Amino acid sequence: MSKLQYHLALDSLHSHLINVRLTISSPAPQGQVLSLPAWIPGSYMIRDFAKNILNLAASKESGEPLEVENLDKQSWKVQVSSSPIVISYQVYAYDLSVRSAYICDQYAFFNGTSAFLCVRNQEDEHISLYLEKPVDSETKDWRVSTTMETHSGTKLYEFGAYQAANYAELIDHPVLFGRFDLVQFTCSGVDFELVLAGGHRADLSRLEKDLAVVCQHHLDLFGLPAPINRYVFQTLLSKDGFGGLEHRSSTALLFARDDLPSSHNQEMTEGYQTFLSLCSHELFHTWHVKRIQPIELQQAKLNEEIYTEQLWIYEGITSFYDDISLARTSLVDVEQYLRVLGENLTRLKRNAGRFKQTITESSFYAWTKFYKQDASAINNIVSYYLKGGFIAMCLDLMIRRDSDGEKSLDDLMRSLWQQHGKTGIGTDKLVIQRLLKQELNLNFDAFLERALYSHDELPVAELLEHAGLQLLSRPRKTPSDKGGKPESKVGKSYFGAQIKSLGTGIKVLQILENSPAMQAGLCIGDQLLSVNQWQVSDSSIQSLLDDFADQDTVELHVLRDGRLLQLSMPVRAAIEDTHYIEIKDRTKLQTWLSPTQVQIN
Image (cartoon, rainbow, N blue to C red; front, side, top):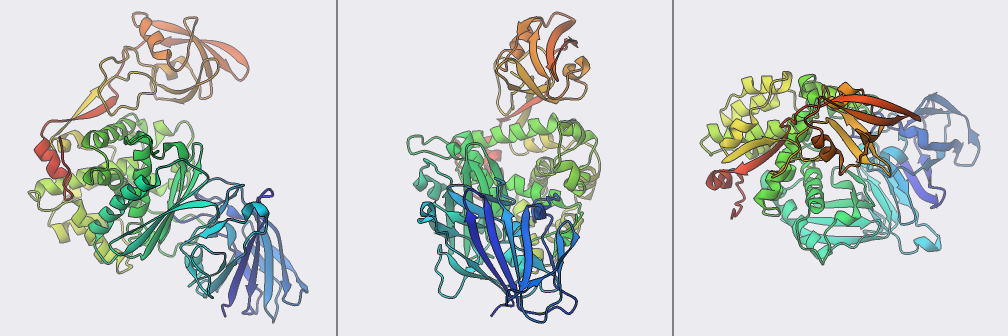
């Protein structure tokens, strides 16, 4: 029998409470110390999950109460007892995200970091968990989805007994109770499941077919045997949610239900392409994060920040593969892939923060600057996901160029897997430079020094030429123009603010550094009503500014904190801050999108 036994039940759907009972069999001479993680692996921000712990109490098995002392915001000490003790508490679960816990009328979802207290000095003990079936009539058809191992006769998808080898494993298998649709398929001996909870109208057969292609690509890339026998895409569907978090044999996803493919629309929509890219990204982490890991994050303490420069390696490289994998496998056509690549490059090039923060600094300060972004972030920080993806792309193109097409970034990833993923040896910040020399006989130290530790621009345009592509620039068509494609008509005037539509006017969301919007004194949250006394909307703002392109200034009327202001904004010609990519040599492009051959028409 396990020395640590957890019992979990729902209090009620409407209270959003989870009841947890923990029985600890091993006595502790100084008293048991319990704690809850402050952050969840893969999401580098202190989230203080313990704030949702309610009504914590302790007793002997006989029911005799034991004193509980608060040690800090997430730790408790229980009075000494020579006999087994029982800890009971509740978890408030109403955070619709992939990181914590959420209960609604259709399902209950939780991560172990939100639900399971850790017992100090017993982190390596075997753990048993009993998931109690809700008794409410509205939950009679609920099932369980988790990759945690069953035992004591409990069958897959049933409520009942589960087990984990230790605490680290216990918190690495998110759990879903509820009504869900289940899509199952097998690739190279690995069983995959797509779980959809929250209601949908999706074409399940298409999801099965397309997702199987993504899974097979990643299995082929890293090689067999895979580190998993079963993998679950655990998907929470909502009106407009988005998110993903990797786990050792599953991922938790949050996605907008209406962006999934429907049976009456067989096109590859941008929304569905985003879903496949998200699945691709999180599955890739099964190798590249959950097994290949920075040495600093191996067995990391979850009560405090852990700093590393290496997140660009893990999230950046993964961000490169998530989209290019869809093109390699012909799930999206080349033009769709190049559109996304152009959109991403537009985002990067519009980001003045890339001239102030290096990508290694972005990684190091992920806990605050990246995960706690405000509206000024675009001017002050750079994303290790976004820039890291382009560093990975540059490395892939440089490897192919300097090896005469014999090698690619795929070979580097396989070396990482063989030397670090399979062995469990953590990577240091120079692992990429070292493997390039040792395994591929290539020295890119000078490039990586600039890319990682300076604000120099990446040689994206030059390297894309080696793939038969040309990078082009143009002004925005509208303030919301994401780029990625040419436009026959573009704006004449530069505004420099991100906006969203309001019932009257538009709301200012972001202001770019040194833009006319900033020079006018516009602030985040302002409600812009008019330009030269003409009412504005998100669809008319650019044409209004263009109408006055021959003036020196325009007059803005703005509502700010209940006050009506009049501001003067300088008129400036549109700048070419929007990028797209055209094909110049299809043979070269075909070569780049190998090893899986893509038919380019």
